[in-house]
Length: 393
Image (cartoon, rainbow, N blue to C red; front, side, top):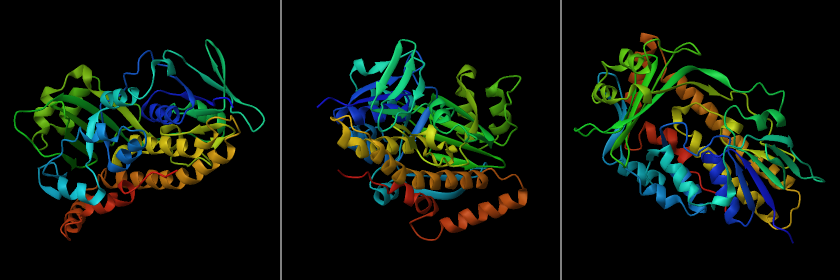
């Protein structure tokens, strides 16, 4: 009985999680990453208990939990600083069975990377899915160094996935969600602050402390697609957010102008018909790119990876067609992720309102709902997401 071979296209969070999960099951795994390093493009990422439980499957959940920094209260505020909803970290931990953890993407990549031998990784290797495979033939991935045959190919190549275009060439692909995001990582100010997301008119600001003493902050605003500020993105952020409550002005002042990341937010508004074809599966943004308004993009990619490994685990040593296993993966993942994509889009519409009347109504409703009992709005709206548990063999 020969060892089954998997090729993972994309060395981001989802791709690395899938590679570790398959490697632990005994697969021969090759990760193909087009970039020259695994240093991720991005700043921070929030991991909820659903992702921690998925990482437990590959022995890495506690490494993330150890990076938790949220203690005390946090919640949603207005630009003046008024609290609309306050949630305690203890209540969130008790409700979901674990903490909400914010960490730098580079830290998460390093944690995942620790679960793989160096021989699995091929960097600076731009690849193309030449054949998705079928029951009677392997999948084929073309690389600059020759073709690779595989019993399983995992397309984890992001929102502009080339693998997705091969599998579903008539799908319209990602669309602009109507707003743009900025991200920064800066030293923490001297005065401590509670983690918060602040909802203003047509825009949002969030500030979260990292374990290493820095702050990850993000902002969004309703702007035309494809724009750039003539005097730099830090200046653009100052124009939009410098008069918002503390610590936002201090965080903006500390930002390196060259370190401000800006990108238009896009989503796969139209679900794919499946997350697989032949011997090839999609995961993460390649399968279900969503707006960041629930902070679930990376979490769902991690879930995808461990569920995919669960379903193909029986094929790890005999090279048989994984078609049934991949169909089961689609059945598990497509309904859940489609629902989360839609919930994230609804939340994006809610926290990017521009009408003064609708803003007043929204804030009153959010504050009012938040006063009805300890299981507040934030925890209730997140329950069906963070309560998820991975399948068992």
